[in-house]
Length: 191
Image: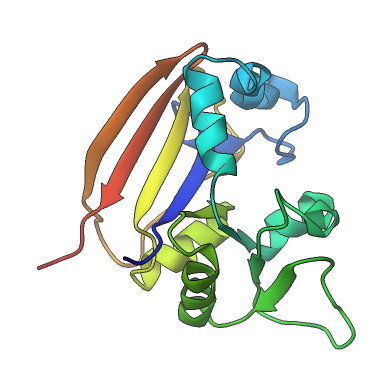
């Protein structure tokens, strides 16, 4: 069995993953920090703790370059020393990522390496750009959307205009947490 490649993303009801100043995980003017309030319960025995625990049980990470840099390159360790593959358009000579991170310019090769590294665990995807690239080449299997009941009105969207046309999804799980609904969708492949 190959590892599932799954996007994990907090999102407002109007489709934004970061507020107008585009700084995920920080207090963002106009409500962007609100997207991450559910993480206050990440160590709880409730639903939010369960979902967070599942995310940390993943065996590899694929991140977009922008996300990787905004996160301070995670100091080379996202969680538990799992391999990190960073999708990027270009690698500068001498730019060596820290720890278990490796830059990849080929999306399919990146997905193949991450699946192999994850073994029987899922691969966590971070970043809108990485998710869009994986979806375009048929390598994104699932989306775990942490839907927060807020309308940001502006900011960075998870998905914009899709070049590849509509993508069908199947809801496979819905969990209600404090301040969030966790929705897991399977990406349906054309027959």
